[in-house]
Length: 267
Length: 342
Image (cartoon, rainbow over all chains, first blue to last red):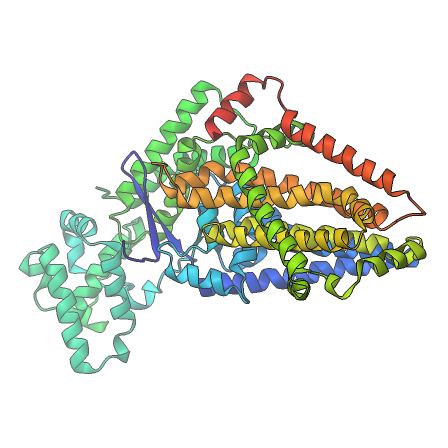
C-alpha cells in the first residue's frame, strides 16, 4: 500500500474517520522540546539534591544518578499516560500518540514505545527511528511498530478571511436554494479548498494564467451542478467561482439573507 | 443531506456535548462502570454522532466541526471496540507476587532459549581464555584483562573493602542504572528480529565465561564465587529475563506458525513484555545494592562461605519465586484476563 500522511480508520458501522500522521521532522522537533524539559527538570532537581551534599556527598551523587535516570526514562511514559498520548513537546506541536487501530491507548503500549527509544536513538540523533519513520507506511519508528501506536497531528484549522473576498455582495446562485444544497453535497471539502486557495492567491498569478485557471475551475463546478442561465449570464468565470465558494463557505443566517444587491463586478 | 447547517448543529450539539462529557468521565476514571441503560445510551450517542459525521463529511465549509466530530467518534470508537481488559488500579504486591512469576512461566521457552544462548557464550569465552590468553583483551570487560586475578585478590583482601569508601551509594546507583540500560537495550533489540538480543546475550556469556575461567585457572574460585554470587545470582537472571522479553518481542515480530497479523501478535505480548522488564528493573535495583554494599567486602571482613551461602539463599528464593509464585488458583477475573492474554 502506498505511503500516505493520513490514516483512515473505518468503524464497523461504516463510518470513516481520518487522522493526520505526524512526519519525522515534527516529531524530532517535539523530542527536542522534551529533551530541553528533561534537562531543565534534572537541573532543577540537582539543585535541590545539592543541599543533600552538605550531609553526604555520596548520597547526593547517588540520588542525582537515580533522578536523572528516572526523569530521562520516565518523563515520556508519565507525560503520555497523564496527558493521554502527549508530552510537553507534543502538546506544543499539536501531536498525539494514538493506538494504531484507534482503540484506547494502553499503559503497556506507552512503556514499550518509550523503552524502544534505546534502539530508535541508535547510532545517534534518532537515525534508526527516523529512517524507520520515513520508510514505514504509517510513519512509525520501531517503538511505535512494537507498541502498535501512531503519532498523529491535529493542526489548528483557521478559516480564511471570507469577508475580504465575499462580503456584502449579491450572489445570483443564492436564488436557487435546492441547487445550493446540491452544490454543497457534490463538491468535496478538498475541491472547495483548492478553489479557495486559487482565489486567495489570484493576485500573484499572471493575467493569462489567472483567466485559464478560473476558467478550468468554473467549468468543473458547472459540470457538478448546472444553474439556470439567468443565474450565470454576464458573470466572469472568476466571479462564478467566488459565488460558488460563497455558497459553500457561508451558512445562511438571518442577517445574511438580507444581502445587498451591489453589482458583482465591484468585487 | 444537510440543508440548513445552523439548524442541524443546534439540534445535534446536545448529543455531541453529552457524548463528550461521558467520554471525559470514562477516560479520567478507568474504574468507572456504566450501568446497562447508560451503556445503551452511550452506544446510541456514538451511533448518532457517527451518523452526523457521515452527513457533515460532504459539507465543505465546516472543517472544524468535522474535526471535532472525528475526534469524538474516534474516542468513542476506542471505548466501544476495545476488547482488552480495562486498565486496573495498580496493585504492586499482587503484580509482584503473582503476575510477574506467572508471566515468566508463560514464556518459559523464551527464557530457556536466552539461557542457552548465554551458555554458548560462556563456553566460547571460557575456551577462548583457556586456549588463547591473548583473547582476554577482547573478551573481558571493565579492564579485567589488565588485572591478574591473584594480585587483585591479594590487593582487595588487604584494603578490607575500603576501596569504595565514601562512594558506595553512588557506585550502587551507577550499577543499577547501567545494568537497567543494558537490560532495556537487550529487550529493545528484539525489534531487530532478535538478532541484537542474541548478540547481547552471547556477548554477556563470553565475558562471564572468560572471567570465570581466568579466576579458576589462577586458583581463585572461592574469591570468584564470593565476589560474584551475592549480586550475580540476581543480576545474571535479570539480564536473562531481559533477553527472554527481547526474544518474546522478536517471536511476535517474526510470527512463526501464527496466523494472526503482526500488529495483533505484538498487541498480545505487550503487557507481558512490560511486566518482565519492570521485574528485571526491580531485580537490578536489589543486585546494585548488594554489589556495592556486600560483594565488594572480602575476607577477612566477611568470610567467603557467608557470601557464597548468601548467594545460594538468594538463588533458592529466586527459583522458588519464579517457579511457584502465583500458583494458587487465580480469581475468576484474573483467570479470564490471563486466558485472554495467552
